[in-house]
Length: 130
Image 1 (cartoon, one colour):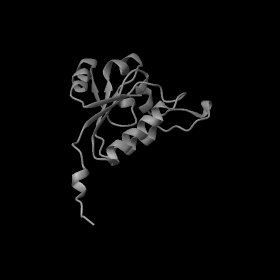
Image 2 (cartoon, rainbow, N blue to C red):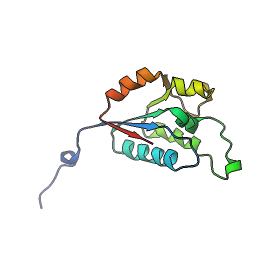
Image 3 (cartoon, rainbow, N blue to C red):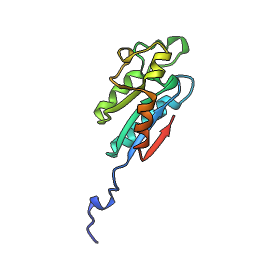
């Protein structure tokens, strides 16, 4: 039997950006998106997350979910750090339109304008929107 080198199967590192646009509850997009990000990061890819539109509510502090009978999963975003996902962004215009700032969020993010995010998106290999 021939020995093989695990490095032979390692492809090039790709830049994956996950764009979160949906509110955190009412659909599976937010939770499924987070799971996909963690899986991608586990494979040592270059992963970034962006929160725009109602997606900024996914990472809002102090979510009250008892009225909708669902568990608040926003603290789960703290797992990103353990997976070395350090490139986390929120769109400035989306935050402002919803009366939020970086201080209102459960995780630290870099707040960028839509123009700055567009430049960042141009540098990605793969963009997935949830």
